[in-house]
Length: 302
Image 1 (cartoon, helix red, strand yellow):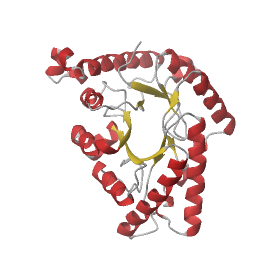
Image 2 (cartoon, rainbow, N blue to C red):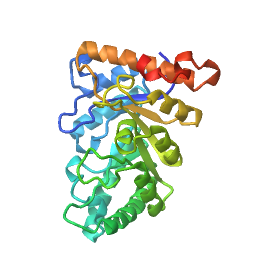
Image 3 (tube, rainbow, N blue to C red):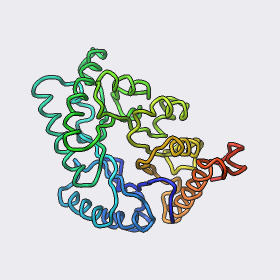
């Protein structure tokens, strides 16, 4: 089918198990099978965020499959998950900058090999320090330096605010916007994740509009439970329609679990996402807005 936006399925976004999105449907964790299925579904690409921590032979096979099928790969997290709570983004010592630079350079090279244009930065405080204000300044300085390195590799460095991981520095969309302002580099952006934004800010539309000039990537998951869009309570149709009307042409990651994690549940969940996408198409074209959409009940019907 033809989708209204450039969606991606994921090859496993939660460490340490990295369960791919259609594991029950395909009955194999082999990422190349899931890449082929994404192409069969008409998706624009796949989300493979932890490439930096994956076995080299797997990364090579993913890169080959993505390129052979003409797909895109979404963001690559630019430091390993094991480093997220070490304060690597707030370390301005020579050794710390060298370590961060090495990760970013490697991640940028991986991103290029995977046809990805975005590096994701998950920024945390150093739990050993108590000078939060100084740590924000240090993170801004490191972001500026790493954005230049990312630019040299043709990729954008995008921060992702969230509250679900410990010690996260950016716990609201506005904090992310403010840190980008302090960093002062044009090659920086924000990853807008509907589930995270709902937990941090509550008002999805206000956050989208506030961050619009900085948004590099949209990820969707419904709440509660981080499930497929349309299975929860979030106004995701409104958000995606607004993005389309505002000119967004980037990827939209289906970064979620299924409300029913079985083969039947994956099929039903995919059908729910298809119906939601049809509503996005209708709502983003005012002359085709359905009565349901006008009544503001689109997610329940989806």
